[in-house]
Every structure is written in C-alpha cells, then in structure tokens.
Length: 114
Length: 115
Image (cartoon, rainbow over all chains, first blue to last red; front, side):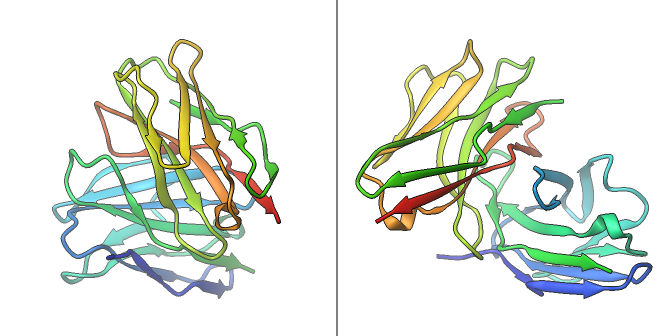
C-alpha cells in the first residue's frame, strides 16, 4: 500500500540554522499538509498546500516557515532560522482530493534545535 | 477554534480484554468528522475509524467501535479482544465538514497491551 515518506527521521541543528524537512506524498494525492507536535503537546496544524500554493495556514506558520513542491514528488518544509522552540516532531500528510475523508500521514521527522 | 481533549495520557489492557479510550471535543459546528488515528512506535499514524457527525449510528471496524454522543461532544474508542499489535499511541481528531483542511488533534493516549 502506498505510504507517505519523510526524510530525515531525525535532524539535529543549531539555533539560527536553516533546515529543510522533506516529504514524499502518495503519488496521486493533490492536497498536502504539515503538522508539528512539540513533545507532550498536541499535534498542531501548520499549513495546507494545493495547486502549488498555500491554501490555509495557522498562526504558528510565520515568516520563518515556507513550503514548496519543487518537483512532482517532493513536498518540503523550510525553517529559515531555527529557534529552540521549533524542536518538535514534524508530520507531513496528504490526501487524494478535497472530498476525501482521510489524510495519510508520514512517520515524522524529529527536529532537535540546540 | 475547535479543541479536542484526551484525558487519559496512558492506558493499559490485558490481552484479549476490552479497553475504552476517551475523547471529548468542543465545537459550534453541526457538521464535522471525527477520527481515531493509531501511531505505533516509530511508525506513521494510520486511520483506525471515522465518524460523520450527521450519522447517528456508531461506526464499527472489526474490533474497533466508537461511542459517539453528539450532544455530549464525546467520541470514545472501544477496542475489543485487545491484541499485542494494538499497543500504540491513539489520537482523536476533529475535522470540519465545511472548511475541511486542517485536523485538530488531542494529545494522545498511549495504550499498553499486557500479555
């Protein structure tokens, strides 16, 4: 069964550095999402992406964050200048179409900012 | 904004027994969807079961069933005949039927299955 994949599984970076988290959604899916989960807290929505543009974003998704679909398969989340509070698990998700009930999640990337 | 609350950070169940995981939510919307996702250790979240708010009948998927109480805004998950493979983190999630984009998750319940 097709799965959403994410790389790397764990990323350690120093405060102020840029990081790019990568996701490969399921191939025939059209809607893409990023979520994050700070340790011990809820999974929080960051952004949704469709037709090569952001369709919705949360308050968390400020100017330090950006998303891109650089080619036909990858979906990336960039954090320009990481802060300690960006340490979290980041989940990518995708779904086939607007009316689809389910979002399919990747295994997550654990980002540690030191 | 919608909120989802899971009041049980950890639960345990004996193999072959039944366990119920609790979830409550807060919304002013009348049409929405509720989900239970399972996340095994180091694996992705997978959908266990979903419930459409307009349906009165509780959803069932094999050993998994829900008790959906719309008026009480409660959505509990019952796992019958628990198996070792059921051990995971379980997340309750809400999605509006109107806007439909983002999921609102609870903090999760870690389920341990005791052999």
